Length: 87
Image 1 (cartoon, helix red, strand yellow):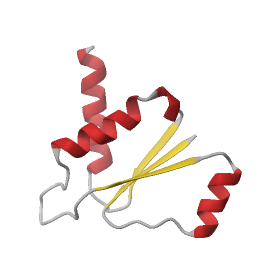
Image 2 (image 1 turned 180 degrees about the horizontal axis):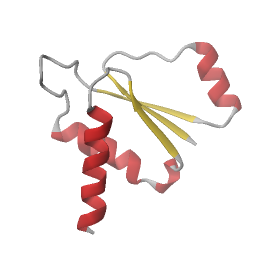
Image 3 (image 1 turned 45 degrees about the horizontal axis):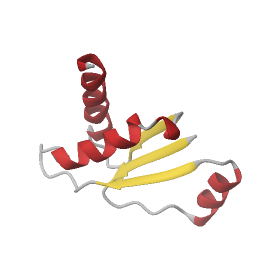
Image 4 (image 1 turned 90 degrees about the horizontal axis):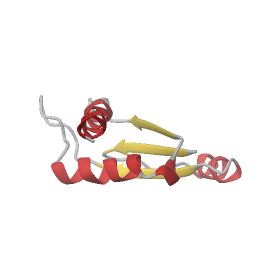
């Protein structure tokens, strides 16, 4: 299992890190800029980086979440759907 966190400022607590290691869960973090007003803090390069993680079968199953309270994870999944529909 892979746990992918998309957030501006995120630090895994040592007890969570130990738990994940004990459960054979891979922790991944992709940093995105903080949201400003109505702008979603997601660049083309970040979408590519996230999609590379999502499309790598070695990372499956994967749980993806965003801690910044924005729509970053939903936009990323919409991009993933677009990739699958295009192929």
